[in-house]
Image (cartoon, rainbow, N blue to C red; front, side):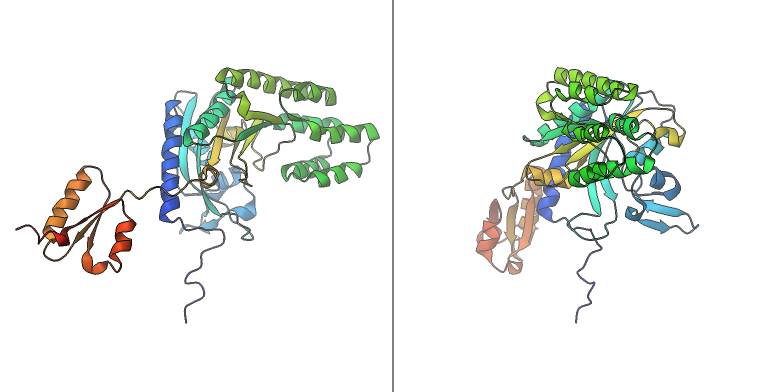
Length: 394
């Protein structure tokens, strides 16, 4: 009797079979082409990081971290995102580099799941980090690069929704003062997009009816650039006005990139990564059912690594992008070279010649082919040396 765990995998882990592996590889190549055209340099970081540094700075929930101990008793984590490790590199090995830094990455990240629920615990991200540019031009460059990258990968129908965490925080502070518990509760509802729960929580607040109506009106601040004027009428403190001005400036620059048709705004937008400080955004594709990509400005993360620098970036969930592309199985391009004992030498030479031409060659002994017709049908072409009257002389 087989052991129960023989064919099982840890919760949330996935096997990547040849077809999907090849689709991921092709998509990475296309994304990389666009990213490098914008002057970004790819780097890699270790899968293992210290919990006290990258683990805590990542803003990933503690219960989602994969933790282990090394031989010296140090607490380690499998990296839960790529932004915090790159911040560590920028603050150490690249501390004296010329700014702004344009860095990019492609690699797996790990976040533990409590239940299967279809959510992966290991998934691959492709993304960029623009470090040392605090301007709206930097925010716009990252968003435009994200859009161009998705386009070049072959995705035609998608939407990037932009918000500003500073607006939401200042908005709640205006009506709820220093009630941090209530603010955190309401922001939690917005993050989970539980708008019914948000409405019920607002109705239960001990504040004036007019203030409740303003809190409810926050959910209406979604759409095109017309929401800028609406947002100013809801909250008039300086922080809210500054956030709206930043969004307006961002939109003007994005129109110069000619990508505004892919952009909308949502001032309810909240991220689970609490290091975001300003502009943030999420990307969606029809029928995907999950977040395709996200990013934003995180000006407080690098100071936690003792580097006084601002930053912004994006991350694309690679597996979801491949799914959104609706990739079809490519036509089989391998060539089969069939040999027997007498034609093995000829088969070796034939396969080598084809491989030099860049072909993918499957060299197979005829005795190891149970169904010859099926074998030939699954390949682009076959060369059957067993029908040629023998092999070459040595």
